[in-house]
Image (cartoon, rainbow, N blue to C red; front, top):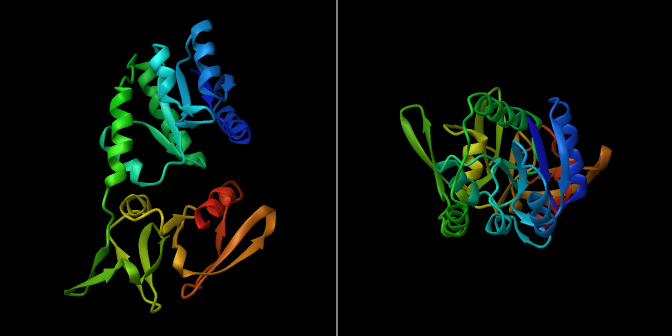
Length: 251
């Protein structure tokens, strides 16, 4: 299987290339704009798979398909807010959320390798995807969670939730009054249901609320440590790859 990467942030493209090389996958080339990609597709044999960023420096990557009939399978790589991801999931469109996680990349590549062996193509309507992303902006976010406590059902309003975290393969929410509750969601499910302007997934284990941040401290290897008002069970570290996006979020 051969691959091209279309990504306007060159450090992100190089990182993705290194990750793919760990799976013995050849990256033919790395492209960085809509115009460069169109020219390349018009003059080269199309690859088996494209790792495609949605927002490029000179426009949306959908514009490539308006000029070229691309015959490759596609995995979208996106930094879109979480509201857009539900549209992808409901329509079986392959995507990876940036910064790309190694395990999620491995799973996506494995799925495409199986399709490739079975000679199955992954085709979809680009205009439908564009509409999905536009329409999903009108999504309403979850304002409360229901928690089962013994024989009782407790309602926790979003305003009272400081963070969500995973522990021992379970997911919990932590409230402003120092209480922890087990919830019947994965952390990935949670981030789709909550407002991305208020909450941010800083790493694999934590989603934090912006109003709950007490302090942000420089940490080793260009990372950040987050201190929350209430939660203090273990350090909350923003990975180096997410620092830039996190700073944009808090701004």
